[in-house]
Image 1 (spheres, rainbow, N blue to C red):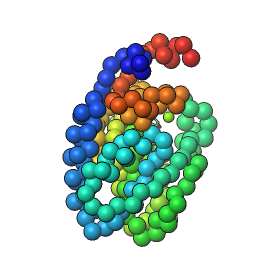
Image 2 (cartoon, rainbow, N blue to C red):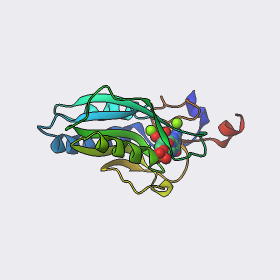
Image 3 (cartoon, rainbow, N blue to C red):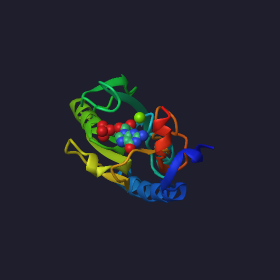
Image 4 (cartoon, rainbow, N blue to C red):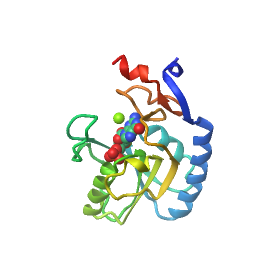
Length: 181
Ligand code: 5GP
Ligand code: MG
Ligand code: MG
């Protein structure tokens, strides 16, 4: 039913599953013996986080954070505010931030600074998607699922007006969806 709104599929469910298995193996090596705190950024990272943590075959803990940009949704002011903070004290911990997509990089730059200020021992980033052309702030993920072009994508956690997060693949919306809103 949701498929009727999709112009084209960019990344299939099978591709995502295969990539999660590869990344999970690398992460298990990186964090062997370390008990990292895996921090999911709500809400977009939930499907990816759910898949990738099940591919990391070592001890980890999970927590979530929700942040939002000040200002309206289309023109981000670059300021970030905490909507829901972690439950966990990160001092001395090894953190792995899980994101759905890096675009301008502002959200992640803010989170990395915050966790360093809170004295995390290490902070790494894994993102499902990387939109490198969108970058405004100089930040890169340590682990990247897929590069995507500078287009608005939905699915696998990514929303348009809170819809499409439950699509089991990443795709580009039909223009008619935007025009009817
Ligand atoms: P950044 O702070 O890197 O500019 O933005 C990251 C956030 O913007 C993402 O977590 C996501 O919520 C949103 N975002 C950026 N690009 C896209 C996109 O192509 N599609 C969707 N649905 N959200 C996006
Ligand atoms: Mg996000
Ligand atoms: Mg969104």
